[in-house]
Length: 385
Image (cartoon, rainbow, N blue to C red; front, side):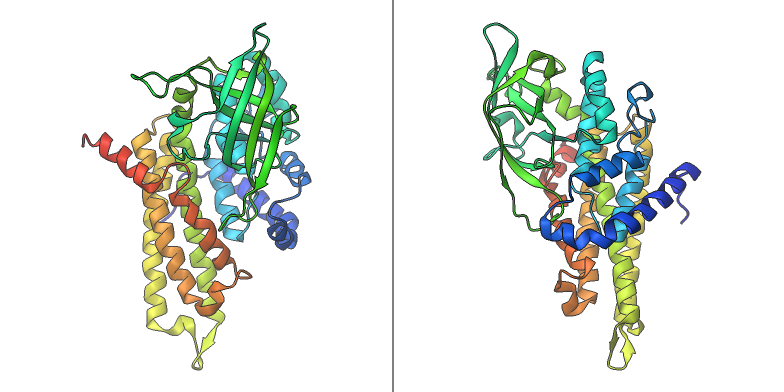
């Protein structure tokens, strides 16, 4: 079926990104994989390419577009090549919406120009050890100083994607205690300079997959955060977090769809070349049936993400719809990638093959951004159950 969500500008961007990946990423990707992250200067190259500034307003050095479609193209092209751009997805997909929506004019002037160039890389710190999806249970605190000039930040965060390279981190912290009526009350957002005294990057976490994405533990010991770096209003942070979740979850759905489509490409290329019992693996009926079944599932996932992307761009994507898209597409990717790895036989278990890395990378899709179980709760609640 012909896709209709992309126009000539999107396809020209796709060509640019594909050429960039072939020239700048593929030749050195094994080095990045061994190192566990891209080199910091790679983000400068992405900034020069213009990918960080697409949705940054023109007055702050960006292109001023309001669309998710270019991010979707990026997800499709990185998956197609079997590569990752590290923590850069968090920089744009998760952090930029908060800066645009809740930043003051002064904050935008200070932060967005360097955001667009990649000179300043951002991450977001929500999850804490022991809290997981229960963000209302966070213990990190930010107390206003007696003279009212700064907050004093104390606590710890974990699973922070982009946390090693980040220059600023949007940190969620308690500025007031929760109440019996509202556990979510009292959370605020701060844009913290990672060079601040008392700010520390702990372990770079050793993950099952996403080996080229730096994921870290962070700690804050009496970190002074200027009051000018409070993002939005005090104690309203939880509501801010909820408003960006549909886009975050759609991003995961699109990534999962792109991974499943790439898995079919990898598997088809492999079975057409691999010979067993004097015949190509592609010539066996089971192979044809398996790949055909996978394609049918991926076609359905494509229809879901395309409809959700259009809804997001129109400002109409609901939390339940985003949860449904994430749940469906991540489950499809799980099934498809597993079946495509099986078609590789023993070679599918070797990390030198992209399908093996894809298999490991895909597993977190059903965990981060809200687990599949949380997605089901959101959908059920929307159904009135």
